Image (tube, rainbow, N blue to C red; front, side, top):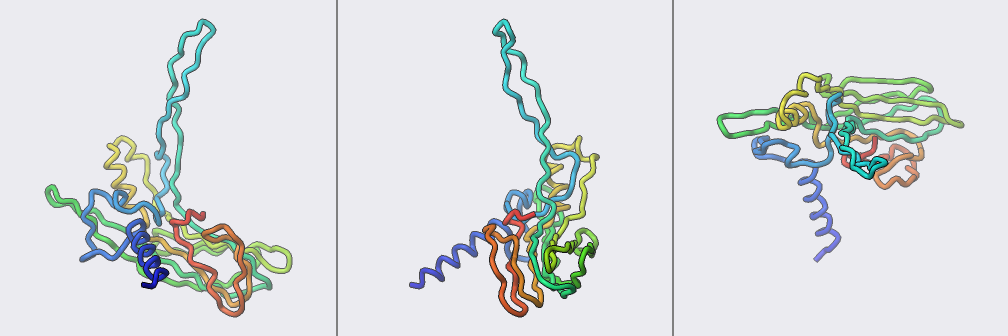
Length: 232
């Protein structure tokens, strides 16, 4: 038995179950995609995502407990992923590869289904230029790729970011939690992947392990960065 190959199969199975997988007829029979998949997701922006937490009770001078006060704690799940790397020289073409999928809500009677819409693998080419910001809409205008180039030493630091531009407005805050979750799922990207290549030697400044590593020689892949790595 090839143990390395078998471990690879288990790792790939776990990845599919956590991030996403090929579905029969692109139909997910689940109450909500968030119930099935837990990572590899870019959420929409929202002003209303928070939870209430109780503060610890305090004692007054007479030793009596004062009532706890609820204080809202705001939390915005990740709506973007990206990475930075250094490369020498001036203008270089950078090939950026990305993909994602979405789910559309469909309910007939008591049967809830989500129809998967796969954006597929896409590619754009951007020429790095010192002290510039390039932004290009993707995923039918619901997302964008942003490339920021900053001077550093004898080269430049390039930051590539994939952003979910969808927004859940405050009109949903009076809805129950299940309805809010459905709105968020409708405006989220699933199975998000982002990677890039360049025609030069460079140091990658972010990776899934957080360790710097050298990308050698001509036209080598930097690495594949998945939203599940929580790099943003």
